[in-house]
Structures are given as C-alpha cells and as structure tokens.
Length: 378
Ligand SMILES: *Cc1c(COP(=O)(O)O)cnc(C)c1O
Image (cartoon, rainbow, N blue to C red; front, top):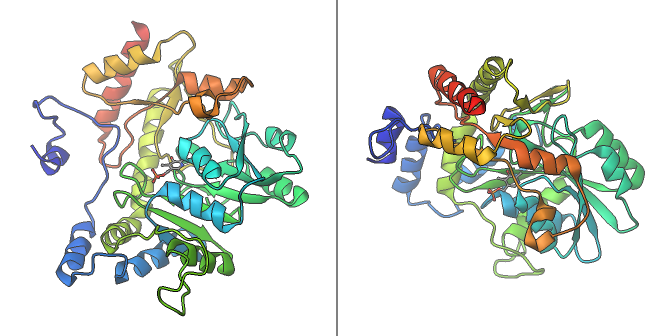
C-alpha cells in the first residue's frame, strides 16, 4: 500500500485502522507545481518557484524579507552566524526545546545558556532570562513551541534595555499571532521549518525572515557560499550551501497558498480536543491571553503518577501514534548539567503530543480522547 492509498483509507499496512501523529495535507497545487518544475527541468535552486515562495511567505507572515534555506536547523545557524554571533558569545535559550535550537548556537562557536520555562505556556521565562544575562550575552533565542508564542513584550523590553539581539525560533509557530501580530515579527530575525510534520511543509526546508534589508542581503550571500553577488565564483567570506531546491519551493508555494485553511483546521482540532478533555485530569498548554496559537501539535501533561510510556503503548496498540514532548537539552549527554530547571523538567517528563494533522476527522479525535481517558483509568 503506498502513501496515497493510506491517505484515503486511513489504514496501516496490515489493514488495521492507524492514525499517525502527522500527515501533511498536499491536496492543493502541490502536484501541479512540482510537475511544472519537472517539465521545465528547473529542479535546482535556480528556478522561479524559489522567489515566488519567498514572496508569498513574506506576505503571509507580514515580514518584509524571507530567505529560503534547506531546513529549519540551518535557518537558525544562518541567522545566528549572519548576526555575527560566534566564539566568546553567550546565547540564552530554553532548555525545553528541540535540540536544533541549542546545537546551532554551539555550531557558531557561541555558548548556549539554558533557562527554565513557565509552567503555564511551557515557553521561556523572561525573569529567568534576565537572571542569566552576563557581559558576554549577545542574544536571546525565543522558541515558540507547539504553536504558542513567548512573552515577546517582556523579551523585547529586556533585549532593548540590555542591548541584546532577539532571535525567534518559529519552527512550530507559523500562523500564530500575538496581539494580532505574526510570530516572527517581534525579534531581529525569525526562523521557520518546513519539515514533513510542520504546519507548512516542503519535505525538508526552512526560511529565515527579517525586516532588516541589509541582514536579508547578507543571509542570501552567506547561504550561497559567500559568493560575491556581482562576480561569479568569487568568494569573499566563509559561506554555506543552504539553498532550497525549486521542487521544495514549488511544494512550499502551494502550501502557503492554503496556510489560513490549514491553521483554521488545526485550531478546530485543538478546540475539539480541549472540549473533550475538559473534565479529565490532563493539563493543556496555556498560552498568554493575547496569543492565538497555531496549534501545531496538540499536547498535554499527563497527571502526576501516570506512566507516559504505558499510555503511549496503549494508544499505539489501538492504532494511534503519539509522541513524547522534547527532552530538556541540559539532560542530554552533550549538554549535561547539574543545574535544576524544575518546570522544564516536569513538562518534559509529563508531556505527550496527540495526532494533530488537518485531515484528521472529528470522529478520529473523539476516538483518540476515549482511548486516552481509558488509559488513564487503568
Ligand atoms: C522542527 C524544529 C526545528 C528544526 O527544523 P528542521 O527543519 O527539522 O531542521 C528547530 N526548532 C524547533 C523548535 C523545531 O520544532
């Protein structure tokens, strides 16, 4: 059975009902645009879908400049490197995040400085950020997890007062808004991911967006091997090949055309989950009042004393894929630290994500919630 059959029948290989954690919705112009690419033979990064995707993306998130790259991780690396962050610098980052947020800081030669999260929205705690600032601190990386947005008002004030750069990791927050403004519009630079399970996907892909025209120009130069834009094969600085292919951009353009519909469906899914789980002992992520989450992955904290692996196993036995939330970076071998981050550790220990893709039916969600509730009673 191929992926296409699965899309329509919702069955796994052995014919049993299977609900994956994620499945991209490629039902718009994706196929048409990719075929246009193939027919034209423009399949490298030299093709007109790249520019079209960047333009439509910039419009969708209301940030003037958008630069495509090969994935969300290199988006972060390019942004940090492009801002001049490197050896001797410190970058403040939540310990509860996807590892790419931390690794890319280290890849520049800078040092990641971990902070705890807030118990309410699971995102970095501005008071903790303030406490960790030293003479070496160059930037704060605000990571907007699961579709919510950090307290950017407080972070902007801290950044302005202490003269710090503000980087937004928006990999999970495309389509989210704070006081009506899009994720990515609050900092100096914003990074997005288009991995297969992200709100908008190109398979693998990423974007760096900024309102700073000079920075955007520098990012384009760096992602193209540091080549002089006026002189081919003349490289004036260490650069990278982080260019997105035209095929990926073709898929991205078709996806971004339907961003509003995708986010609307994901919000409806999360609302349904929340309603059905209202009287259960699980705790949902609680974004700040002014945040309209994009509801990337609907995730909950299981009650204290409930073993997450057992719940996940029970759901898996019944054909429902889940996934644990991230481990804290300071608990992994590379970044092991004795310092305690009690809130982040608790979220990391108790959190689990439920299927959250646009094609999910309401009846699927009801079934998933029934299974989750049953697993909590056992
Ligand atoms: C997905 C993700 C990334 C990295 O994106 P890739 O495209 O997988 O490289 C970075 N940060 C966060 C928070 C993510 O969820």
